[in-house]
Length: 243
Image 1 (tube, one colour):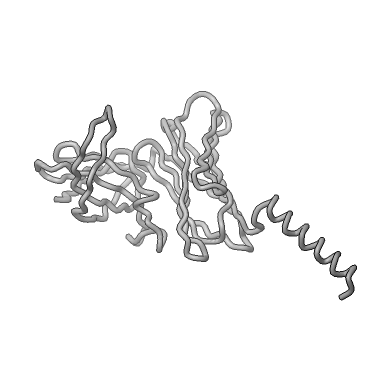
Image 2: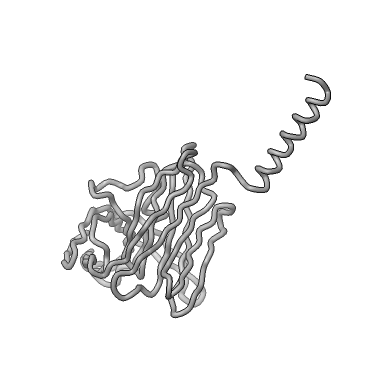
């Protein structure tokens, strides 16, 4: 290779490196989609994801907002350059977008109001770096679950997370309860989880010891008590005794 060829090759490599810096990784993927509302719309919506990449890394992010009669958007840049964004327009609907995602397997979810959750599994690869997901909030697909822990001087908390139809976690290798689940305190001897989407869920019961106050902020020490699988059936009220 003569000196002129070496110069041209060096210039070409430098240009490619600069392009990669300016445009980001060529394999960075995007998951975008919508949340359709069937019936009266919810008061608030969260949209997020958690994933296990082809390299075994575990990722998660979400964004959420209260819905009004005006347009708005919220973007989470906590894990930049990976961002999660929700956009709301009363005339168009709710859209979400998760960007800069590496190849892997992702659980894409939305949670509407307190207890309604819809989700899908998506695969991203070098050949398929983007995906579109349609999620739904449907008031005609809801049921209620009452969880009873019995009378006790202890304070309890439950963590609810989705299960696949076969009763297993929907995304192997990921901490689904931590990053796609939600917590609720048990007040008294039971708790009613109203307006849940039909399907299977895991319920983790934890005893808790709180310190602090609502005014100054509080913390809690949680101790696992047990795990249960519960079924939410459309139009039904089901009860489970956890303890």
